[in-house]
Image: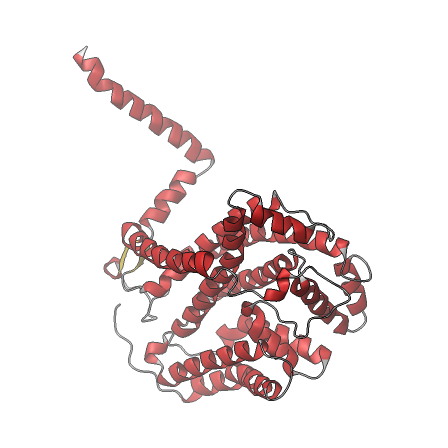
Length: 404
């Protein structure tokens, strides 16, 4: 009897292992988890490398809260605004779910913007990580489309007029512009078909973002993470396992992230929104100043900086598309700005320029804001098209260390 008792855990363990092997042979879930745990990363990563994981958590929060909100939302122009108010007032913890989703969008964009800035500073777009960078920019574009459509759903004044202004931009495209706008609207004005389309796409696109994030992770694991020194890993001595060292670091980052998140949800839930969106949409009353959410403001400032409608649209889209060409515009062999004195100064000037554009985007389209927007927009493109190639040619980088 004693021997049987001792052998039973072993038998159960063998059965468990057999089941795991059977599943893993057909669907390598456990192999993937093992790979993720044993995945080796440079030992000198700082807390800025938490931002990728934080953005992933933000995406999960948006999907979960979005699915719950969709259960109570009515995508109809006569009921959308009141259904949102019903969620806020009558659904158990509806206010919390709605605020978590609205504030979560801002938190998501904050994490992604910082993630992009980290990539710009440390040269994470350089070979062999160009495709990793490109997939990240595609994720950013899909995020922007998703956020814009989500902003329309409450069907407040700013939702309605924001949708009208932004969709009308496509009419500037020669020959096919008017047809594109009619297709987007589902008719000849922003109305119920528009709201239904935007609701359907807003629900769908986050799952496309999940698929893109999977590709992003595959590309990341192909050549590994970049590091603050921007040099390649020479041996296993330069790396440590991702778990437990960086999972612990990530969880510390999550703690800081959730503290900021909670502050906005519980104390300033409407600080990052526009008060006009608490007024039901009225096609007969145009708001005096139509502004998008804060994370669109730099691009909105570039759009308004050009007197021509078509020129503004082209410049706005070019301001994002130009990021795809960054690996070839900046041909310096040195990745990290820590060893590039000229580029480091240019980087911080570029960040200030982006903040100025964001501030100008929230101001009325009048002087002196338009002139400042034009100067800032000009510098934005000057940075990529002229300054970066100039720096590559004349900069003398500092000596790189042999190992990290």
